[in-house]
Image (cartoon, rainbow, N blue to C red):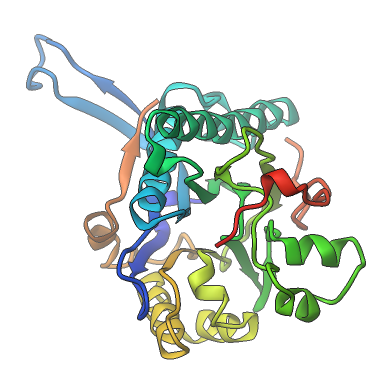
Length: 328
């Protein structure tokens, strides 16, 4: 069993070089059981909280879309609602052990429900504010229930997994360009060069009431590295360059800083957000920076078998419909 305290986590967001606002958000959090004491004859302060060991880890990135104020609001609402759903609605019995298939199915359903709840909350707020109508956000959430990795995803932010020195893109971009490639209409290079190729057909919020969250599952090993990022990174930094940085740098902090610097050096056309988790040998001593991460990333505590295939899996992405498309 992986000691989740050995996970080296860090996250960083940067405005980039061309944007006046930062619409990106991120979250790094422990899933813990907690008891809030009202009163007791023991030597606890009234209303103090007693927390258990970490049951799981959450990493999340979101990239707001729309005018600056609306995009930032959409990504903020999505992160806040995701936290609310994890605390109050998520199937906690799946955590802290190797989840059985039925437990996994319930957890997957809760993850999809969480993103649909984000969708409703964003649309509800936009209904009474004309300036926010059409606001939306990408949302990529990774939950570590060792050794299982569960990812729920909408948009073109990405989740990568590095295993044995090989970098794999876990998620698929929900862009018109990627949809055309999946349909066999053209190459990714041709699709990206076409007008509107970067537009999104699947976002949280936006103009359509519909959302199509994708759930991906994989299995983690000691030595793996997990990376979540917004498109401000991957539009400038290639997969090979990302893999090289993951290989050369030891700590999650160094990886995040190098990735952000690389994206800015290549132009920094958009906000850049990265969240990294490295899974160290449990015999190693915890890194000194573990205590710093909670302060610098704003890490939060959230109250509350059968081996998974190593290759990420998800349903096939459908061809985009015009009513769902959101331009960047």
